[in-house]
Amino acid sequence: MTNAKSATLKDWLRDKLKAGKIRPSKSSISSPVMFVPKKDGSRLVVDYLHLNNRTKKNIYPLPCPDDLMAQLCAPRKETNGKLPSTKYGLYKSLVMTFGLTNAPAAFQHFMNKLFKDLLDACVIIYLDDILIYSKDDASHTQHVHEVLQCLMENQLFCKALKCTFHVTSVEYLGIIVSDKGFSLDKLKIQAIQDWPTPTKVKEVQLFLGFTNFLRCFVANFSHIARPLHNLVKKDTPWKWDTKEQEAFQR
Image: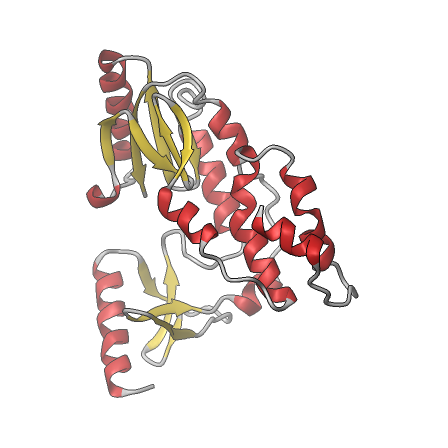
C-alpha cells in the first residue's frame, strides 16, 4: 500500500471511529480493505467475498419496481429522499455495511417494518430510495412531516443534495414520474439510440441488461428481444445475422 493510500486509510478509520460507525475488534474473522479505481480517483472498500460465501442467505424479497410504479398511477405531489481488517488493526462495523450479501434484504425488511403504516398509502420504498406521494399540497406536507419524523426518531438521515421536495415530476428508479404519467429520461433514450452494434456475447448481455427497464414502455418487448436472448444462451455459437440486427435496432 502506497504512502498516500496509507494516509487515506488512517483518515478513513479516524472518521469512522469518531462517527461511532466502527470499533476495535478481537474477532477471529476478518475481511481485507482495498482501493477500487474510479474515474474521479479511488474508493476504499472492504472485500467481503469470503465472508459472503460462508453466510446463510436472507431470502427477504426486494420489491418489484413495476409493482412500485403501479402505486403511482394517480398523479400527486411527490418527494424523493436517499439514505475491516487493516494494517492498523481489526475493526468491527456498528452500522449497515456496503458489500455484505444480506445487506439489501436486511435493510429492505427494516425499512418496510419501519414504515408499515405508510407503505403503499403515501410511501413506496426501494432500499434507501423513498418516494412520498400525495393527492394535494396539504396532505403532502403532512406525509413528508410523518416520514421525516420517523427517520429522525430512528436516527436515519437523508443527504439534502439527493432529495427533492414538493414537486410534480421526479426520477425514481430510472423512470420519470410526473402528473402526466411515466416517461424515460432523455439521456437514457439517447444512450440506447447511440449504442454500438454488439460484436460478442458479453456486449449483448450488457445491452439487454441496460434495456431491461424498457419492458413497461415497449409492447411485445420480450418477443422483439428474443433473438438477442437466444444469442446469449449457454453453448450457443455466435452468429449476428439479419434477425439479430433487426431486434437490436427496434
